[in-house]
Image 1 (cartoon, rainbow, N blue to C red):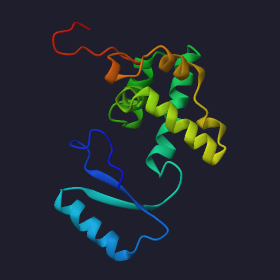
Image 2 (image 1 turned 90 degrees about the vertical axis):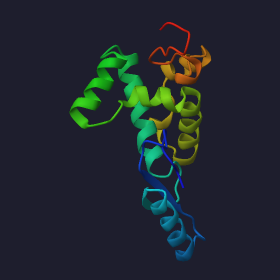
Image 3 (image 1 turned 120 degrees about the vertical axis):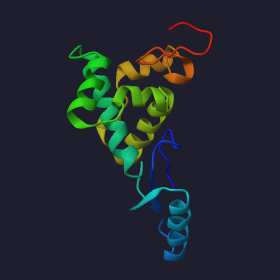
Length: 151
């Protein structure tokens, strides 16, 4: 199972069928997820499954747009939210995932698929080197204030 973050707010779960996963296992898992109030979507196993295989290169492209100076992170996220219905925008989502986790995932996808779109862009690598990891470090594409701190 591949739960998205934050799992308490997202009602759909990606279920990956391995090469040896039997129907009885999938049925039991679907029943458990239904009991938890989650909708399951079964997909075959592949690098990044489906969600990360699509989302992570998209985020990488969004970072490239910011790096090129075409738009700010805020503008990219507002456009993706308002025009395409993305709930948080790709760059706020990147901050939630953790930019270091995103870079690691992109390298794995690049290695396993050969897709150059999965090679982490320079700005993403620079941000990780600088310790700007997203929400967990307090700063990524956005600045996050924690209890007792000012943004």
